[in-house]
Image (cartoon, rainbow, N blue to C red; front, side, top):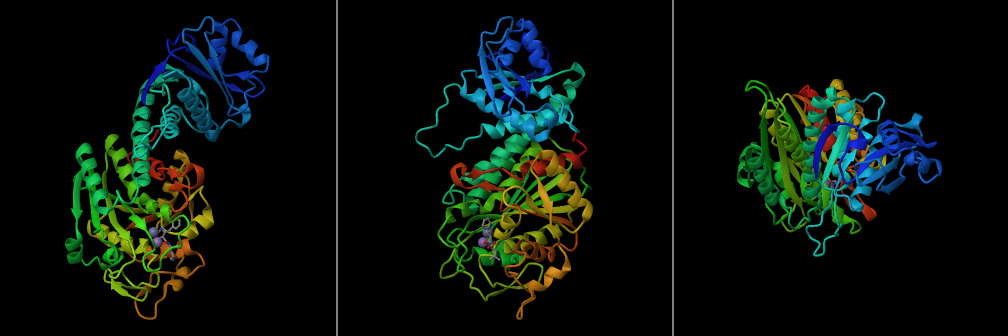
Length: 498
Ligand code: BES
Ligand code: MN
Ligand code: ZN
């Protein structure tokens, strides 16, 4: 979809459709009022007759409104004015875009972007509008022989701003929204791909292509190189699979040469069968999404590169398939990680932490400023937080705070969970330095505690996205989370978050 910014009156827009909001109790917003004036009370009459009461989620499409240059007027209900906040703003945009996509209008000028939202300015409104519009119109149809054909899909969206002096900041926010929206779409595409296509080698090739497109450095390690580095925890996960593992390393250099990089690590299990500790059959197909952490860090670095952020960023993706087989790791096996710490594999289904711990040690070697790992790590996190918030852990309070704030601004929220030493006891092994499982209690916390043992030498945060990376049921599909959170965090660090 194409986007542009315009300051001007709604009644003067030559467009296939102009969009304005109506609050409950039939209260016209300012743009709707301007349209009504130009139309000699035509819109006010319709609203008074009760055809548009302003209930949130409702819409009314009008054709050939007198005095208006656009072919159509779309009124969007906004709910009660006093309750109109961030969530309601986003919902209004989604409703408008979805409705436009299904009408004959392939372009529109939308004036909902002028509505005041408490604590948020024009940049936030524009960025959110673009991200929400791209999110609402996303489709994954490459494997459908018959595409779900929308007659005239929405192709161009003009976003209204009230004052000319808002144009510069709105243009910048538009570019940011596009970069983030494209990052989200990339993460969704990668997540939705079937595991027979998106395997570790394929993911590495895709990363290499992306690097070429966006001017990123790219290094891909194969099994032999990982063996040399002593990444035995990572390799132990890949042993049962026919598909060989990869370690993908991408870099964006927007900062000075002396600046330490921020490192994003993404769990890249392209299919998690559980290994010898085999998962039950129900919903096992969804374990193709076990590489959504990897997908999200690729989405984030793509967004950062498209926004040309003035910071140094590295992405590390340990990629492997977790399969049973004659050569697979057994429960009871002991492996020596790259850090030298030994791990007793009690359950081969706790494989995420095994590949991440070696990626963390690899990150330590490139002297990072901060490391954030993203992983569909535990079913326990889904039990704790459901599908609303990602689990957040950090060994530094201010990092946790910054990430929480980024999540709030992006409406891609996380919730801070404890990393207290008290939980470390659960990882005790009689035979190695630690066990790879901590038992049933606090499963998401003990997984994070396991990772913390490999992140002692730098500022580190961990996002458990098991509940937020994809949706099940009728709307099954990747969400692209937490690309918006990560991108907002990067924007804020680069001093570009208005
Ligand atoms: N990828 C799964 C976590 C998962 C499960 C995410 C279900 C989303 C939905 C992970 O590798 C896993 O299997 N974790 C185990 C850990 C346990 C064996 C300690 C889990 O959560 O059951
Ligand atoms: Mn698993
Ligand atoms: Zn897994």
